[in-house]
Length: 327
Image (cartoon, rainbow, N blue to C red):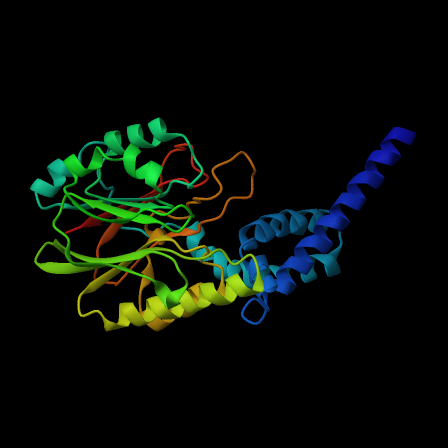
């Protein structure tokens, strides 16, 4: 009897702690556009929604109608933002399987792209190299590209003879390796933040495709959050100046649940191609069950991206992002 009473008390406390925590997180997230700390809370909206769904069932079963109504009201903003990613768009087709991108390219079927943040202190060189050899995409974007990674990925220059790179000792180096010719290619520093990004054009079908490969700052302080937002503004300006079909890929250090993500897509007219295959997380690549989709593929509506998936664990703190553009 005493043990049963203690267990009931423990679960009541656990339910109250969960209710208060997710309610506070949901409320704080509503102010994400105005305060950098509040924006951090927006990235956890899928987890708020999951816990709120469980709490609604518990409150319904226990006859706690007021708490159930409060939970539903607080869950609505989270459901509005997260809901579209829980239901994959219909009508999509599957992109190439491993090693097939070269064949599909020869058949003018499309372009296979992999974007991977290798983590500049990561020493799992063999795992990354084996994955890229096996996957063999047409375009490879490497973030946090260092001099060591340049040596370890030297073999890519044989299979992908068109490249653009800047190796750095900090996390802000970047490289692009391509089997396709890169036209009007350049490295850019968004908002003069001392970071490396790339802009280049490839031929996809009859119309050129302008690709922006980026790695934005992590908003873990007021200064960095401000600079990351300046990068988004600068990137939006570059995208709007383009006369071609446009794609933005890479580690943007924000989730689709951030108000700044929605602001960027509204400004540029780009759509989140992740919705083709539903919700796929890319960071962190660990057992910690708090994963976030911070690596992205955004594109014009007329760009036919038919696949956006997270790849396997290759030893980095990010999973690769695999993208297929069909023609």
